[in-house]
Image 1: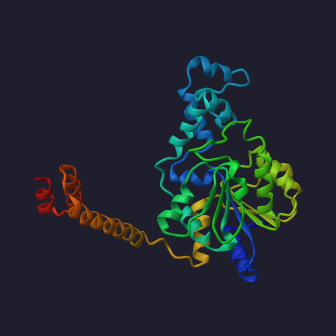
Image 2: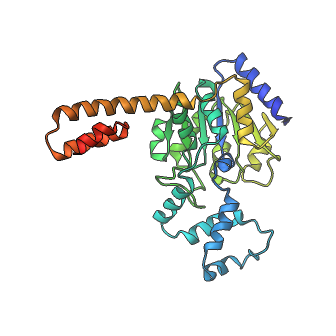
Amino acid sequence: MDKLSLEEFIEEIHSASLKNGDSKYVFFLGAGCSESSGIGLANELAEQWYGELGEATKKKFHHDEDIENEDIDYGKYYFQIFNALFTSPIDRQKAIQRLTENKTPSLGYYALSGLMQNSSFNTVITTNFDHLLQDALIYSGLKRASVISHHNLSQFIVRDDTPLIVKIHGDAHLEPFNDEETTKELPPELQEKIKALLANAKIIFIGYSGSDKSVHSLLKESSSIDKVYWCSSKELKDSELQEWWDGFNSKAFVEEMDFDKIMHQLSTKFNLENPDFEKRAKELRDSYDSFMSNSIKITKEKSKTHLDHLTLGNSYFYQEDYDNAISSYK
């Protein structure tokens, strides 16, 4: 196994992509990638949720060990605590939705969205439920992604010139798989499609702990993976993926876990442009103002009722044309 510094990893990726223009990379993103965007890690969330449980429910966790111990790994009890606090499927879905909504993409997601415009790097597989990568693509005004947010959409998984995001555990707004049973194994149709994505591809793991049985099962069945890069602060040990990792030959440990730092340096190496937010905002504002002006014109020509004049007045008011707004209101 190779051990690479971040700089060596960046250089290797850049050099290989230049030598082989049709090379295929797949980014595999875990929860650690969204931490800087304000979404807590499993152990943090589990500890928070444990504090919200009633005393009678907490006692159920005490038979194995003292969970009140300061050094306890609450993440070990993540699924049990989550299910104990949120007892119905709707409650669980809404809890995940609350965790992920109104979050702003960090630097890493913007850098990745730019890199995904290159067909060699346009495929992302993630266990995350959030919309941070989709939002970064939209806010940047770049080519949108095809988002597979539920296993029933697996028939649409195909790698082409369109950026692709595959959410193997579902979406915060649909049916997130967030318990031990549903994350034990991927649906067969989804697993087959992802195996095809991984064929002859290099996988870059970032922000992923390796504690997922379904991912272990998937990787064991994917025999034609070209190479694996494991980006983390420590080597892969004592996880569900340990057996697979030990038996895989073409692999490299990259001693860096900071998603934003990794992606920013990749973006710099590939000389990608930074998002032009001012330009994007102007495009949106100009488009909206154009439609608003047309609406005023049409409403002015057809206004016959009090409601029409109220609509017209509101349109003028939005454009800060207060004289015409007052006239219309009157």
